Length: 453
Image (cartoon, rainbow, N blue to C red; front, top):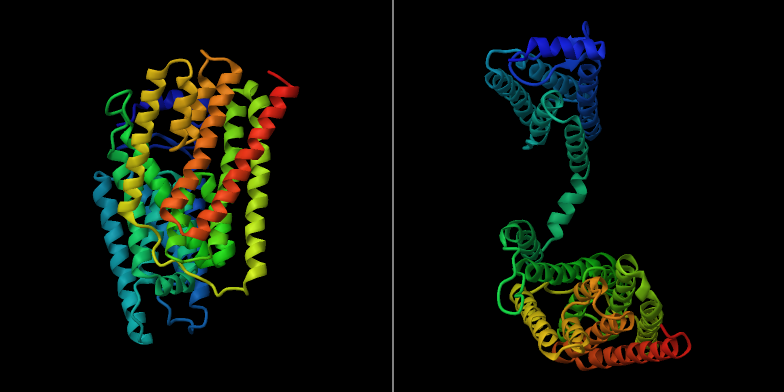
């Protein structure tokens, strides 16, 4: 029950003594302006969904449709009215539930009659009408922003009928299976995986290893979709650039596997790795700038040059292929990603992390740089964050540790390409990797020689 004394005080403080609606059973007092605004949102929801339904059925003769824009608008207002009245009923849930059942029965009956008349077999209008009633009720008892957002999503789904049906008709079982596995990895398994380190020398965080597995699978799936939508060349480059924001190593593994399976030209796949690597170099610069700007003097020049070299190497591999071959037919990846190979590689990276910590603890002062190099074989971002926050070593040592991690990561991509990919893919990858390392090394020497820290 509402405390009437508190309500009077609430009214006196806000000048709402005559414009107040009291919900005797639950909920706070609601002033007239908010009450009307919620009804206005309910009306908007009905008009939005009703507009789509009315446009979809606009060619039917008047009187033959079960529900149009007017019916949907009234249905949403009916839901709001039922929710408002239910707030004052002795049993709120029973009253609102009864109203919902009655409305669902009426609209289902009319939609059934419409289907019988037109010879169709669709429940879309009935379901949309029930949803409209429910969203109208939710504007009164819930958050109007959620109700409005749900209405926009529902209208969008209804309007995209042809596109959705066409997409479902084209999807293959490997694509559906991979999408379901990726969603399960992200939304079912990830929340229940422990977030505490396990094992010796600081251990390995199972949640981080699983995130690596998700990144590997996600990048592979992103590349697959890119090829389906944009074609082999554009799709691989765009998806590799996007994948470089997550993990350039994952892009390398994915492209190497597809090069071995001859699913796309090795020059295009190696150009994708170069693009992802250039993005990863820029990502390291951004992390250092955010956490330890004093390191930028030694970090930014070599990585910027390496980024430029990676982009140029990627463009050269594409141009070289264009000169030697005629335009190839559009290729399509046969499998978005292989689940067990993704898991195995993520576990391998976990062992690399443990080895890096072991070296860092056993070797001593130089162990920071050596440990960073070993850790860089698996991941650059984590070691960059760790070194940037480390205050017990000099600026030059910290910069060298981060650059060693980046160099090791470049070499790890080359090793992955040699072990998994084809010969030509490895050849292109070796050229770009060595060019990046040499350019970055020369730049570091120039910076230290002419502008020592």
